[in-house]
Length: 235
Image (cartoon, rainbow, N blue to C red):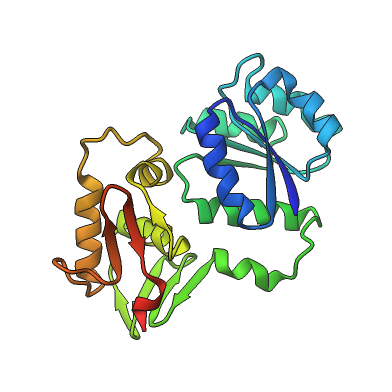
């Protein structure tokens, strides 16, 4: 298991990302305050530090600057601030990567693995990283680097948002994903209880993947819970 110190004051976001990474050989330790981050790094000796920018006590950029001289592992900024200035500043202060919180979790995982591999910290063989880049469920094949989808050998044309939604569902095949979880993972915001755009997106995805609108068998709606991509329905 790899130890990740995630300096993040949003407990829900920290838990969401921590749960995802935990399924891929990563233990996430949460620290909500920037001014406690250096002490936690010294005490926990993580393999990688994941830093938000907006933090109480000390902002993430200041933490990065203070941490870089004493920490040899990767430092990755994970933030909702989509700013070229912040990105350039973070990298100049010693961060190894700058990732937006709206990045799909599989892409986040792949980029963290790249950092660990480049530092010689990856302990598992390379093939184990493949699930983060390519998913195969029967006749459904989803390739992340090329962002392509094939069903029964036929290429399926999806928009960027549709591909991200399918990847999220397929990455959790057999699990029910609630609207709240999908909104946070794909759009970086909370579900307000009224927005039906996710339902519309699911309907479009079903149509393009040959699923029934009235009685879907591949991407099911679980009443009052969310959506379920059925792993066995793609043969």
